[in-house]
Image 1 (spheres, rainbow over the protein chains, first blue to last red):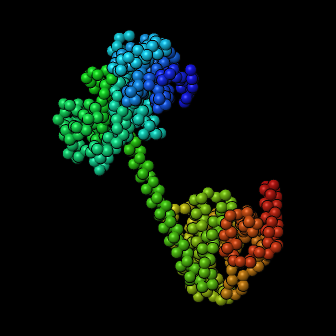
Image 2: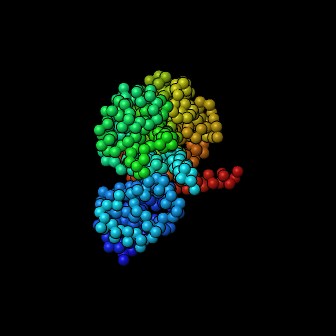
Length: 126
Length: 417
């Protein structure tokens, strides 16, 4: 397992899946760092992204916009996206805004990886 | 928490952030980019752009997200379309439903890029630009609440862009004014120099005198630590100090020998006459007429026209007086050759405190010494005085002695009271 903190965002790879860890508050500053890290991982050949929200308490509007951007980039690269360990309040927000129509949610990182291995037999997420 | 409450909180948070962003005038493009992000994130939209209307009717891209970066280059807005949009006052146009001429003309482009909503930014009855939106993540239609949110947020962005334009216009005008002011000052300086040359032409023996007095005065003022504007002012005063000679008989000015008392009295009118000539002019620098009037005053009260003493004489006039005398001593006159530098130093020492202000003499001596020792980049005094005049081995010593002696006198005067 390779762990790096590229651009101050923690991430590591499991096979061709990159797991990127969001910080406590997903706003413009931290959102752009996550976006850069996701792009970097996709450019280096990852076929799936897990964004882990275990530490995230709050996501603001810019954070939502950036997450939508990451989903777009991943779709264009043919990569899957799973959000893991999202708290209930944020799940409600994602649901309300329709993000959950475009990504799968997983309780934790392991479940996210299992979900993605399941995707290998089903070609598209949406 | 009820979804509607949560949505409200999410929207309020975005509006608060937007208000802060718009108030941030530091980086305009970043402000608009962040504002667009906030708008897209509030409604979870996947595509959006902020376009600014240019005067020529094209649209400039200020921020874009999820769309082709060159998309807006293909848009334009005609005057008639602008008028229609302003008259209709429709806050947002649904691309698939609108019969607006602007939408109609760009319909294929808009739908091809997945843009569903076009929001005109109208500030103070002017079409500032458009916000283009599309791709709601929920897949739902835009609701009435969405329209209200979009309207409020786009208005914020529009005001931000409008304010930025105003600031730019003010800055542009200030820059134009600054340039015009600089040009006027340059014209003023050139005119004064031409005038100075005209004054000197009247006196065939002292051609270039006013120009040199202007330069020496500038050098002394700089050495005394005057600010740039004051230095420019004293230079002008130097150029114009003899303007009163224009009213003195040419034969008296050009007399190739010492003149009699009557002629001397006529010649001595020139400082007051200069004041009369310069007073009505609105100079960009202070006290130029007074510097011309008092450049023949002496610290001991034996000068003219008013017989002022030390503190009564403006410092500028004292500077011009020294520059004037120094040039007189270091240039050839009809009745004598110029004096040696050693002789000039002797004169300055003898007359400091009676004719010349010692502080001014020290400043000038320091400036000369710095040039002689190669401490200053420019060698302007050396150039004016010509090759060889300041080359003597004793020159630095003479200057250093003069400075030391006058500094000593100044210190003892200060200590004495």
